[in-house]
Image (cartoon, rainbow, N blue to C red; front, side, top):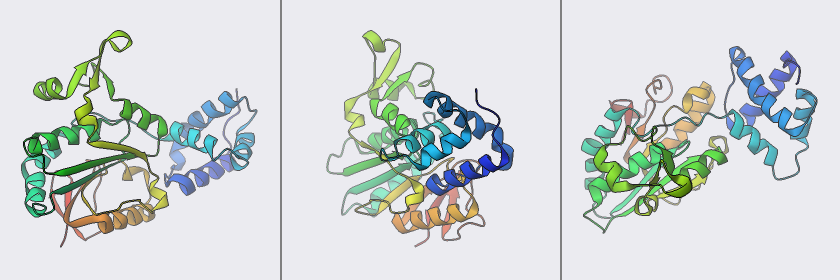
Length: 277
């Protein structure tokens, strides 16, 4: 069992985490960071937090341990159709407007940024599929990205517990999921036709060099910026503005706002913003 995390060690790890993923641990969160670090220290059989810090600095395996640490400290909570009003807005206002704007190219690009274990991205995909299922001329791609590789593997598999699918409308559940069998009995598996809409990729917001070949029409980045300081938030929103199509849409979480961060977006409603032309 390792000792308590000292103030000096806390500052070292706090700086390292912010440098690599932009997350700012407040001083009041020291106990949380200590608990998460302890799991990695113990799993590696190390003696102290200081020894673990040096281990990270010497990591020669392509940053493998750093990725394990990131997987440990990042939050991967998600839910299907979280904040239902936002999905109603997507179905009734946002997608119809984008469909008119892109009727010539018939190309739709959506980014679920910070997708965690995939529930948000699949929720978006179901709403999109409901609108465009009768028109196969559209080229539709949904990027689901996160920094947590374990969460991405979970989302890519698309296997969810009975408890986690309770917020999915029954008609969607019947249409887009099938009941698991054998070792997956009691779970629900996303059908392949829906999974094909999604592309799961690891992406670090701090890199700020997002590999997009074309502009994005809609970005979901909900409950992510609450972990960033104002400097990182502004840089991230600036990249969102750059990546979005003219009049594109940005979805934020219920506790997030662009007030004092960026004035180039207009509030549409339900924590949803539209890029000003």
